[in-house]
Image 1 (cartoon, rainbow, N blue to C red):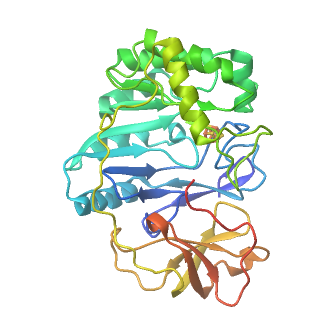
Image 2: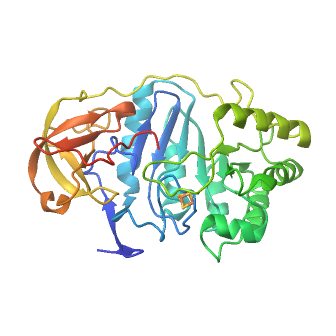
Image 3: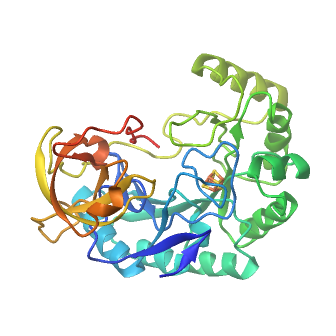
Length: 359
Ligand code: SF4
């Protein structure tokens, strides 16, 4: 078993249903954008990380990397189910997909699926050298959403929780990606009191460097503290204040920061069926640790052999979770929003921190 940051790196093969968890595989939120999550590994420890990734995490007890063949078989089924011809495959996850060893293969495989119009990816980019970018361009990657929270090198290191993080190199790699024909938009997280001064700088740089190519070049994200995420001691902005300040920044910089309706061509598209209702009791086999301590992954005993119906469930156990590995148990479904399943063993009390969807 390989270790990453002292945690087991679990290889997720075709025996795991690829739909059902936020940690890996495929997330379908009922639009033409299909999220593909190949790995949870990330080398940074951003101080605001909503998914508590990286070496600084104290709440994870495992990391995942998905077999590219298993991921592509499931993706093809999901895209076929959607039945539209303008699917955007967006590669992201509870880690940085730039660390995925089979990234170019994943991009090329996704591009080859009938119905897929575009492949995009969220990343911090630094781990992809020029060669990596060239491979992604040849594989047909259309757009990179690059996370940059500060252009000031020292502040960027502080926010990334990594003294070695070099934002100047990331800026160079953005230029390289544009030269290779990959469009780039930048998506900073705005943390009030920490990087306010950086937003206008990032907007001006993005416009000057030609990011977006007709799309809004900067997609600023509001800092939202998450239950399981790392939190910063600041007062988060309300949504009203956030939108008002974005409009002010647009006026100040002359750079568009709010996408026009329809600009990214996101629309409703058939959502995968939900095989289990909230409250339903399901017989499962516990197959692996879940990403956070106290959780396990479970697969229903009755499977159909298709990504359209099969699900991996996250079971919130709390203390003694590891004792369930390999066992057959009954679990009750607690949440099933967007086919992300959270369950609890029947007859056990739910640990207080269990509420996971939406990250
Ligand atoms: S915010 Fe992204 S890059 Fe930063 S630690 Fe979390 S997953 Fe990694």
